[in-house]
Length: 272
Length: 83
Image (tube, rainbow over all chains, first blue to last red; front, top):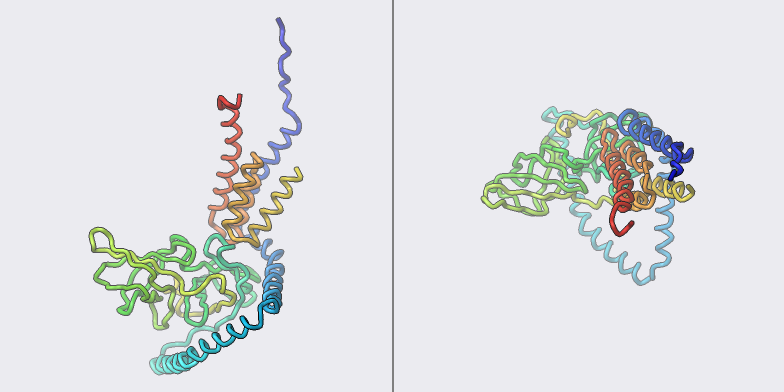
């Protein structure tokens, strides 16, 4: 008996699918390995205006949403915030005086002032960004340089500028996965290495004798006090000699809308 | 074809406007629906380039999803209860 052999011709639609698949593989290798900055530049040109508009629209909606809240709840919230503000006003005055005194002493001792501080808005932040990076809306147009330190709320060290584009920059947070940062821990200022775990978290290993407790600050070495985290948990290993500290950034990432970039700073070396 | 185009639009919007874990969940979902979604490698590579140039984890993730989603029907078609 003879049988009809199946045709050896490849279906044209399958051929086309294979070609498209090969093309996409080549494009993805090109984008990821060969030309990543070019793709980022194109994306920022297209999406930066949209992101900025999104921030404005979200703020408008949040403002209008307050009309839906009951008057009683707004009055209660207002009173609570006034009390909290009164508590912090005195502390803020004291801090301002101490800061001025600190700056005067540094000037007397011949320490140069920090470089110019540039206030910038955050376009994208974690968890939208998967790498613990921020996209800010200033770049080489405002003379931002790679490795410039980035801060929030005056004294919170966030990270350093990793990439600079014409109108945007990417800031790599100190808590980025596997990023190592030299820090001082606790009241005694014990030197250590903080390893980023992502999501605003760090891991630090110290001898138990360092006597670090929950709530101690983790800060950058240097003459200017820059906090990068607060110790949240202390775990001692089975041998009882090494303490593993888990520290977290002392702010809510979702509330991070404005940051400060310092250009021409003397702190660039310690921030790496 | 229209479904895949819609999936690509949704992935594009999710990478640039939604948290990364939602984008990952969508990538896995679309990877399982459209068996040969090599597009996922492109989106992973774009996410790498936008948020951390020099990092390749998004690309490898997209490639893994694409390969796994292509292998699933291959394996299923050879199981006894499928025949």
